[in-house]
Image 1: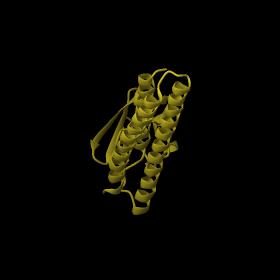
Image 2: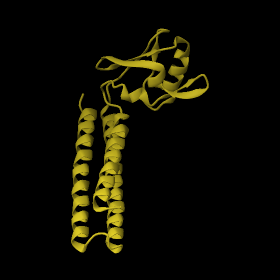
Image 3: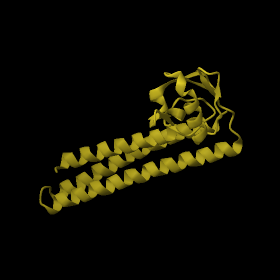
Image 4: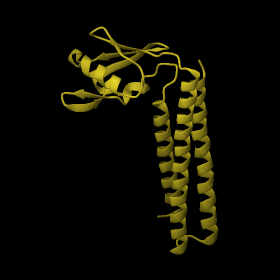
Length: 186
């Protein structure tokens, strides 16, 4: 490993941690309809648990309505069962060809609960970033111990890793703040 490879590895891992945080926050319900809310739902498709997005077209025709149109109409009952089993808290309405999910407005308690859940996911993201910093600093220490970098380079590398951490912590905070705003607005 070298100075640059330690930095590149840390940045790559931090980008993945940020992406994971975004994905986790997408799954939290707001008052608005979003296809991300049901994409993770797994449908029993001929005995295989398959993501809903692979067996149906998901669209948002209105701000509070999701429509799910299966590619194969014979699995509409399976899709309904999968949605009922999921933890999104919305009952599907089917006309035999299309499933509609109407998002009821969130109560104040629900908003606070979802905002707290989002905050927890944000904190998990920050902890993950700090763990990546710790690992990168260990690699930097190993480089110094092996004589591959000087004392000054070691200090510079640790400073660069810290700057990288701060940049990604700000990004996680921005994503979290945006999601919290969506949750708390009507």
